[in-house]
Image (cartoon, rainbow, N blue to C red; front, side, top):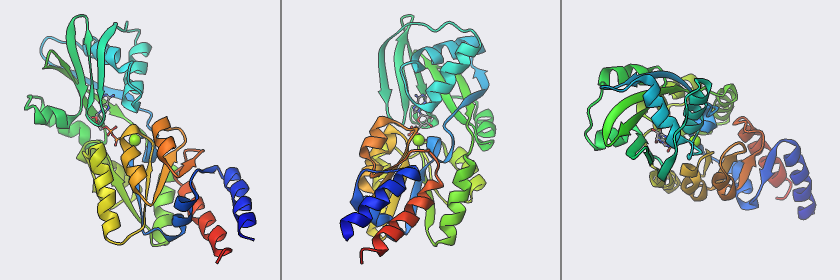
Length: 290
Ligand code: ADP
Ligand code: MG
C-alpha cells in the first residue's frame, strides 16, 4: 500500500503549492526540531525600495545612484533590482559596464566610464577600514533598513539605504511552529541591526547575522551536531550550501534557480506559512506507512 499513499500525497502536495523533489527530505519534515530561515526574500518579500541616498564628498545623489544602478544591472540580488528600478523611475541614464564581478554575500564590482565601482556590504567597508558616517549608518540600520556602500576607485561615493517588507505569513509560520515545539532561527548575510529589527517583528529569538554562504552551511552542521533534525528555508544563491546541508532544504518558489535545484521541497506560492502545511502533510503521509 505504501506507493499508493505516497502517490496520493504527491497530488495533495501539488494542490497545497508544495513541490516535492526529494522524498527523504520530505519524510524528515515530520521530525523537525528547528527551522532555519534566511531573511531577505524568505522572511521578507525581497522587494527593496530606496529610502535614502547619502552622498559623500563631491558626489551627488544622482551620481551615486547612477554608478550603483549601472553595475547592479548585472546582478540578480533583490538589492540590485531595487536600485535599478529606482534609477529608472528617476529617469537616470544607466552607463555601460565592463569587467563585472559578483562576490556572493559581499557585493559586486565593475568598470563604469573607465572607473572601478563597487557596491558592497558594511562588512566589506569595515574589513577595508574605510571611513563613513557611522551615526547615520546606525540610525538607518536600526530602522530595519539595509545599507550598501558605493565606492568609486576605492573611495566612498555614498551610502544607499533600502527598505524591504516583512511577509505577514512569516509571522504566522513562526507562531504556529512555536506552538508545535519547533524552534525558528534566522540566518542572514545582512547587517546585525537589520536582522534584529526583522526578527523582532516576527518573534524570532535566535539570530545569526553577517553570515557568509559557507558559514550558513556550517551553522546548519552545528545544529545537526546537537542531534537535532533541521530544515533550511531560503531563496538565494548564498543559501544553496545550507539548503544542501540541512536534513530538509526548502526553497522559496520566487527565488533563484540555484536554490530551487538544491532544495528537497519548493514552496511554489513563496509563502513561508506553507512550511507548516509541509510538516502536516509529512506527518499524515508517513503515519499511514508505519
Ligand atoms: P541575505 O542572506 O540577506 O540574502 P546575502 O548573503 O545575499 O544576504 O548578502 C549579504 C550582503 O552582501 C547584503 O546585505 C549586501 O550588503 C551585500 N550584497 C550582496 N549582493 C549585493 C549586491 N548585488 N549589491 C550590493 N550589495 C550586495
Ligand atoms: Mg535571501
